[in-house]
Amino acid sequence: MAQIRDLYLTAAASAAELIATPQVASSWHEPSALAKLSVQGLAGHLAGQIFFIPKVLAEPAPAEEIISIHEYYARVSWIGSDLDDPFNALIRTSGEEDAKDGPAALAAQVHATVQELRTVLPAAPSRPVRRPTWGAWSISLDDFVTSRLLEVVIHSDDLAHSVGVPTPELPAEAIETVVDLLTRIALRRHGATNVLRALSRAERAPASISAL
Image (cartoon, rainbow, N blue to C red):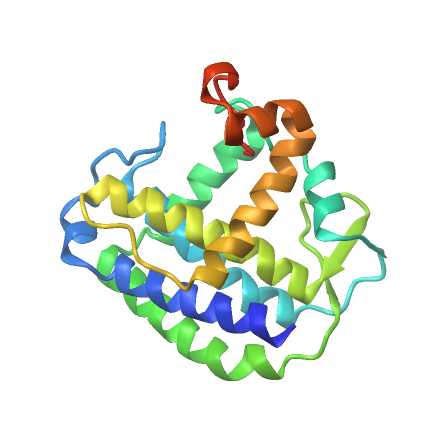
């Protein structure tokens, strides 16, 4: 699974460049494109998808059951949850906290973390990882990296749109990986017929097949 790690590192480096742009700094205290989240909070949340990787690599390997990435997304409670759900509120406060020292400090921290990961991540052994908010399960490191790739790709678009700059261009393989994953989540949420129609028949497509 070396390829997924390379794709993630490319996306993370792109996100670091985006966070460091003057447009992000000048919009820091403005609302973002996401409800109830400032540009500061969104930048912090995007950065968190990079900070997560060294955190999980530094933790002991969990003993909980290892499940697939598709089962992981089937089990999480936050998909489709209300904006005021405690999990979503925590995301907002965590993003603000990660970015509390300002845009320059956040950009420097993200850049340093990406540089660290360029050395650490390719050499990391295959192992399970787990976050404290999960249930009694873990996922493989490469599946976790895939989940962070999804977050980086989506929130890079959110942040770019929020500050009026073009969405960063990423390798086709990175976008395809994310779209494949989102499609599987959408199939589970909305059913095969709705997804099929949304992709092929505009005249009877549902209003939304949003995966998240």
